Image (cartoon, rainbow, N blue to C red; front, side, top):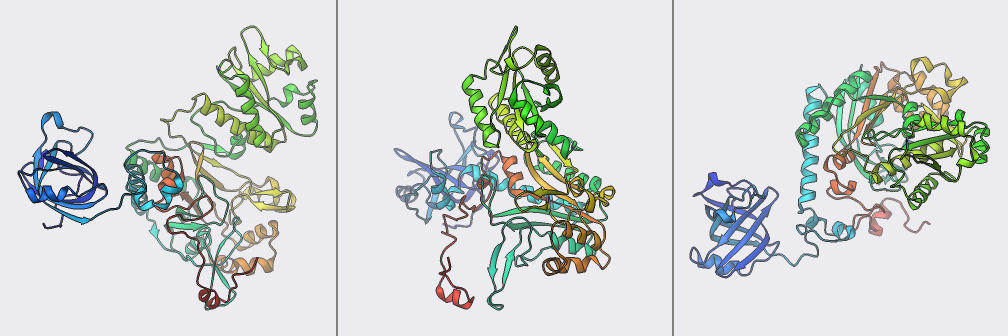
Length: 589
């Protein structure tokens, strides 16, 4: 038979009845019904039922006796209507079937260790080892199609706004940007190393100095860090930079791009413009700079109300400059058992809290081990501030501000999931702005950049570099979707003297700054325009679009949490000859 296919396995319909077609694909299932053999033939486009009837072609029917699941075959035959009682409404091709008069086995298959098409409790390790089989499954096929569609739409939208895609180097200079670099030894320059880029940050700023005006790149980035469910050692960003822009313009372009992605990929309309929330307001109200806004339950500060209480836990915290804050959990008094409250306490402890106090508000009484320490007037004032009503539960955390925020943020999320408060039909985008420019590292006894060292401060805070650096606000912004940070960026520093001030604040001396960032400082001297940008986490966006449980399910060939590839067995040892060429030793400990 001629193995050049005329159609794929997902497009034939009743409009093709009577045509002779050639299909190629994988055997999804084979069913022998006595005289007739039915084969579901699969490719990435869909599935078509083909029928082998000995009365139509005896040789093809005999040939079909030997085929099994995952064999690659080609068939030629006539498209026919299925009998009315055999129509499969779940398939795009369910109205028709192909009666085969020629069959060719293009490649047999061993019995696979995993079945990509049948739901089963296959370990992730086995799936990753046989990723080439796993990728045939409908979920991963769908996810990678969504990934392609997302990048296609992003490119179209950025092109519409005048952005040009420009590649930047993969082999670059090691610079301190927060995480550990992946290093690549240079054979031509012994004992010297390239670094794989953690981001194209410096290059895209230099492209602005070069007059490129509007740049973007869908780019691989690398960070040698401990991995979690939503982290990979190599990840992909939609990287954007533009000259003569500001927050308002960049927000508008980003929102239009996200709206186009949701419309094209999910056929969902998202409302723009996105709400804007200041960093401190986010921390005060939700305990997090990436709050999930699909449900309420805001944090309430009770410090002034409970000041003077005889409850020593609260009193000691307030005396030492800490906070007493709480969540009012509506209609939860019956559903939150004592065990459930104990479990919530353990969550709070995970984030540094020493414990969690609670009060259940009943119709005619309050239930809690702590109410005996409070006068009725104080309790009444507290419950009024919280908006508590009969049937509610109040949970309290008292500690240092950061611990209070972290613990209550995670308690809020845990309660939202446990009590089904999160409206999963919503797509809640928000911008978070006005982050602190720097934060103090108690361990290293110095300031560190909250975003990165190239973030511009607000104009009105320029005089605070010497007097009060901790109060400087950055012109930085994050884009948050359903409690996930999916993008972050800033207005950049475009003046050399301001960049030098920033390096000095971070403890980077002139000599070190010149050694590590000299090329950027040189560029800023020669007419660098004001510029700004954002980096969008493509992998995380696809995870949220697809509803995948793990970021590994939206990447074709992901790494494990130990940064290994189970399919290729990377990383691996290399030939000693290669090490000698690189002037490296393998036995260093």
